[in-house]
Each structure stands twice: as structure tokens, then as C-alpha cells.
Image (cartoon, rainbow, N blue to C red):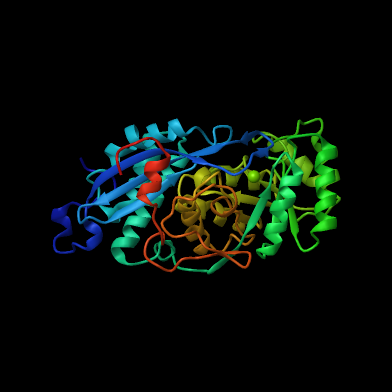
Length: 391
Ligand SMILES: [Mg+2]
């Protein structure tokens, strides 16, 4: 089979490089990772465990690359859909292709199945990890080079029991974390106001962001958003449902703190529309929404070209997806507002990486070793697998 952009072995002649190895292995696992607490967001909650899908690609020379799909059913899609997208629809399009042909493989994947952005993010991550391992380069080098080597970390405050979150806040301050994001809009307005007041009073060193995760109705959104804006948070994120572009634009005009879009903007096409309709001052860029690291960089570039800010968001992920996001942000100048890769350190009972995802002094440290810089531990994959091959 001949794919667009593919150069035949005959045409390549003597130009064979290590990255011309073909991809010979494609393994997929569905994991359930226990978590330490409940997290409530505007549109739903996570309790007991978060579910992810892992992809391992193997090249003919034996090198491997890893990727993670981190879906949330109320937001992006289900783990079962990610598993099926990879296992059934993308596998035949990847096996036999060359490691070097990432852009062509990703374009084929985009055309082969609609949506499934988390599965495509896993594929892009695994292709980059594999190429980086073979070339001896960190993933950020393959994405254009390193713009930053530390990324300020924001941790979300989302426990329905605020006393438990106070213990987390104490720990965050002790760890040097400087930014938190209050998840709001899942209970009554008084609960949100009480938590804003308590954080401002008891944790004055913390900067605060607010995220409603679409939790407000069109009727209650104006007054509740305005009341939260009075606390002067860094920004307020996605008060209303993703498709309410007009209402987002009106809320933005009402308040004097930045309004950020998350669920309204998945890929570059949404970003273009959001900018032209003036719905936000900034955007949450996530590889799980955009369908890969390259497309996440496109979203950030469109935001910057339109004078909008960007930060690096995430889903409920393990350290593996955090690493993919970290390399993407390291190589993307337009993502200026830090990241929220906190789950591996502050939410999962146990991460799956062989070596820990590194957070120091309130910032994620960008790895400078080949590929993503760490890989999953096979024993932990075994321990948490719901469905998949023997690793
Ligand atoms: Mg959000």
C-alpha cells in the first residue's frame, strides 16, 4: 500500500537512516489507576480510579516508544473508544510504516477516524518517543527545540470536602507550588465563595485560577462569574457549555479578569473560530483535545497570532501523558501560563513510570534524555491492566 507523502525504498536509494526502520509492534492496554481522593468538576466527577489507555510501538531494530490516551467520558470520550480507535482502526495504518513518517502517519490517522483525539495523542506521543529513542534526542528536539526547561505547575483544588483540600493546600505550599486552580460550579455558589475567601485568607502566597468546567447554566453564569471575578483570580475558565460561544463572548465582556476557553476549543479549527468570535482571552491547550503534540502546537500558535494567552492543560493522566505534554510545552513559546500536570504527584495512588515525573520548586522539570525521558514500569502495567496483552 502506498500512502500520501511516502517515499518508496527504491526512491530512497542509499538514503536509508535509522529512522527508516519500519514499525513492527503495536500493543494496547486499558488500565485503571487508583486515586487518593474524589475530584469534582463542573461537568462530572472522578472517584476511586481514572482509566487510561497505553500504546507501545516497537520498531524493527527493537526500539520501543510509548503513548497514553487519557480520556474522560464527560469531556473527550471513553477509554473503550480510545482502545477501539487504536486497536481496531489505527493499528493497520501504523504497522509496516516507517518511524520517520510521523506526519504522514498522523494525517492518515486523522482521515481514518473522526474525533478519538486521545487515541491520536497516544499515537503521536509513541511515534515521537520511538523516533527520539532511536535518534538519541529528547522529544522536544524533534518538535523544534527547547524554549524553556521549567514549567510552573498549577494544582487543582477539587475535593467536595474542603477540609481534605486544606491538607493538600498545606502540602502544596510546603512543596513550593505557587499556583492553584479552584474547580467551581459543581455545588452551590456559597461553597465556591467560601473556598475563595479561605484560600485568599489562609494561603496568601498562592495565586488562584478558577475553572467552572461548563458547570453553570446560562441563567446563573453572569452573576456567579462576576462574583468570582471580584476575587481577581489569574483567570476564569469555561463557565458554560462548550458550544455556547455567544454566551462565552458576553461573559468575557462583563468581567475584568481574563476568560479562558477549555472545552470550547479542541483543535486548531475550534481555536480559529474562538478567536474570530472573541469568546476568550486565553486557551487551555491539551494534547488529548487536539489529537497530538503537533496539533497542540498549532492551537497555541493560532492563539498567539490572535493575541491570546495559552497554558498547558491536561486530563486525568499518568506521568507518561504528563511527559508528552511537558515536551510539547517545552518546545512551544506561546504556552506562557504554565501547566497542570499534577496527577502523578498529587492524585494517583501510584504513578506507572519507572522513574518519577519530576516536579521541583513549584515547576515541572523538562527532561533532557532521549524520547519522552521515562517509560512505564511493566510490573505496574500488569498490576493495573483491565484488558491488554501480557507486557
Ligand atoms: Mg478546564
